[in-house]
Image 1 (cartoon, rainbow, N blue to C red):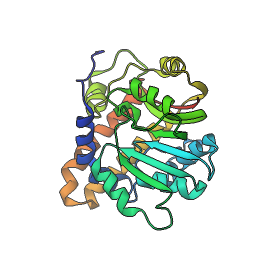
Image 2: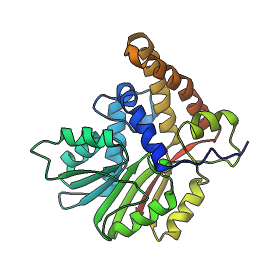
Image 3: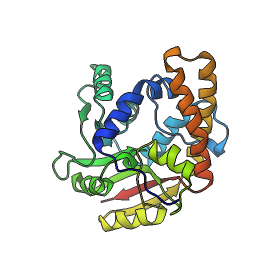
Image 4: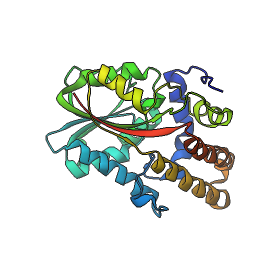
Amino acid sequence: MNKQPPKFTNKDTEFFYDHENSLYRDVRDPNWSLHFGIFEKLEWPKDYVKAANRLTDVMIGKWKIDENSSVLDVWCGTWAVDEYIQKKTWCKITWIDLSWIRIQEAQARINDTNKDKMDFIKMSADNLAFLANSFSHIISQSVLYHVHDREKAIQQIYDILMPWGTFVFEDFIRPNEEISEESMRYVYERLLYRTNFNHENYQDFLKKTWFTIIEATDISEHMKKSYNYLTEILKEKLNSGKPELMDEYKKLLEAYPFMVKAIEKWDLWQSLFVCKK
């Protein structure tokens, strides 16, 4: 109990997502709605992509962005989210990610109508090579828990935001000091996840970085719904999925129920934060 998973590096995370790329895309959505969802009244979802887009809509609403906004998406993992945001707001959006595979796939999907409004760059969130005051808005969806030096990344995010800029993100947190062995194995070690942040001291750190916190919301029940739904998808994949991915389906099908249990036992939660510079 209460041990930390092994330390990891950005290279470890890059390898993890390069390796998992085709699997995650096959299980969740061929068009790359890879993040979690917001479910209306926490009902059993009929459409995972609709729920995922609803989370993006919630974050767009908290952004208040328009065609004059300059937006940075930190490691979203999917070009589809940025395309969705860009089409709804016509803002200029830059997406960074560690995975060359994902960057190359995103670049291949840019068309003539949005190529001047979208940019995809391979970059680490804890080494942001942008000038100070470069972006009016920054978004991050289920990413910062992967970053090798999350505190450094948040400080750099503050630096590259324009004055009065908005930072909207959701991230995994660790509500309990004591973590069960199964949660350590199937959540923390599997996802290369290390943190001592809970819902309260995460806010303390954001304030220490000089962010003003507009909103801090627990959305763990929605993450639980996401994993329950993905578990059902995986069960179907065992009967009708790709033969070359069967072993990978089984590994996820073993892990995802433990993600749900971790949320129920307070070994894992998810928080949504809205911050202003």
